[in-house]
Length: 139
Image (cartoon, rainbow, N blue to C red; front, side):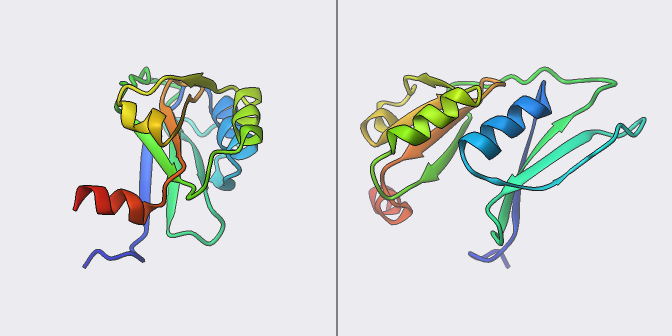
């Protein structure tokens, strides 16, 4: 049975795990939960980040032998519900860590937050609403 305590992993490729680490750790503030520390022939390089003690983590992979090119679309979103206005200092940290502020494809996200493209072009949305507010919109 899947419930609110079920662990979740979201994974996607990255061109540059060091750049991704700077963005998600130094910019967003996630913790590095695990990463490969040396190249193992035939295996992917991995970077796993998430909140300390959380039930989810974000995994970025890099296959040095056959690297897939990340192919983000405008709707490939990683949404974080902050429940308060987005702090400009957070936006500045994300930009300093390799992110680029971009307009959202869906105007909802510009109305309720800020969208930042990560170094691979995937979009992080910092939403000023809470998950409960979002859920009430769709129920």
